[in-house]
Amino acid sequence: MNKLKLFPKTFLYTIGIMSIIVLLVHGLMYVMLPSFYLDQKKEEGNTKADELVAMLEVTNDEQAIEIAEKYAIQHNVNITLGMNGEIYRYQGFTPIDIYFDPTIANDLVSNPHIKENQTSQAEMAESPQVILEKRVFKNKENLPIELYLILSIQPVGETKQVAFTLLPYSIAISFIISLIAAYIFSKLITRPIKNILRVTKEMESLKKDSFCIVESEDEIGMLAENINSLYDTLWHTIESLEQKINDISEVEKEKVEFLRAASHELKTPLTSLHILLENMKYNIGKYSNRDFYLGQAEELVMESTKMVQNILNTSKLQTVAKEEQKEEVSVNEVLLETIETYKILAKAKNIQLRLQIEETHLCYINKDALKKVISNLLSNAINYTDEGKRINIQIVDGCLSIENECTPLSQEVLTHIFKAFYRPDFSRNKKDGGTGLGLYIVKNILSHANINYSFTPSDLGMKFSIECKTDK
Image 1 (cartoon, rainbow, N blue to C red):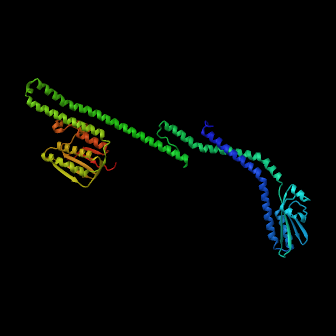
Image 2: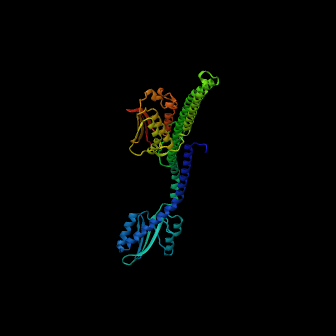
Image 3: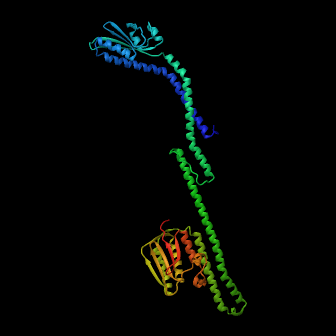
């Protein structure tokens, strides 16, 4: 049985239970029918006798005779009245001769069954076919009346025989109905489970649009909903993992490109240092002036050290950017703190810093990271703005913008501007153009924080805009 599939197993269990119920019901009917039949007839005879007595108690002799005769015909009973020393018989079914013996009257009432055409009490007790009810009362003229009401019944044995004859047909019909009902029930029960089994097979092969049809709100329907929810969660997890893998691939790709660019940037000063030291070692030409070229060598070392430090900081930023603690920070507050440092540099180059803050804006980002972004942008703006020019800094309509007066960059330059160590042709001098990591760091911080930004030409020169993001 354990190896059977769900439908045949459910069908066999159902038909087995229904077969037991059919046999028990028919057995109980066969055993209890005669007894139930007799009890019902006794109750009917008692009720009719009481009803007739109630009618006769308010009549005189003549009326009693008329009522008894009509009642016998109407209700198919035999009635015997004893009034004024005379006996009146009214027969509603087969005539029965009844002889009343005062000595056995009480026994007759206590065992009220007589046989058709019986002539003795002994014969009456052998095969009962009628129910006898006796009443003694007085009419409205205060005359005593004896009432015997006889109710016909079918023989008990004959009733059992009829039931036994019909029993095989009844059982056969019940079995056929049970088979049909069991088949329909098994189909209805197993259909949603088969559907769930089919769909879970599809889910096993990761078919994306697979889902269980929920046809009910019972446990099977709840199971289908749970499977759908589980599969939906699984797909979200898979998509999230794929996105994370893509992000990791992008980070690794960026790291490779960054290290390649870093090695290229470091190679130039180190090569220059090597050539300088080697020429100084052999006192070649002008390099014999060691004091002068030792100063240049020191500058190359300091430059290389600064670049290595920037590379390490940028590499650390790539590693922890996504794990940094984010919080709601005031853009206004961070801007005002950071700008104080650059006011001196701007004043040294005679650059006007124009600040416009309309209202307080919050941004969901790490505070130190935001400070680094603003610091790099202000540093770039001051470095690439000529003396006597101006820089406009605004926080308007939820957007922080830093706009400096300069020659706008070409579209070709803008396509490379956020790459590591990239510097436009006009700023190849590291003293003027820096290391080329500023905008690369800004891009990484804002991208990891999912904050929109743009760097575009404007009427004044170039404008960097940051959208203040307050949600997680």
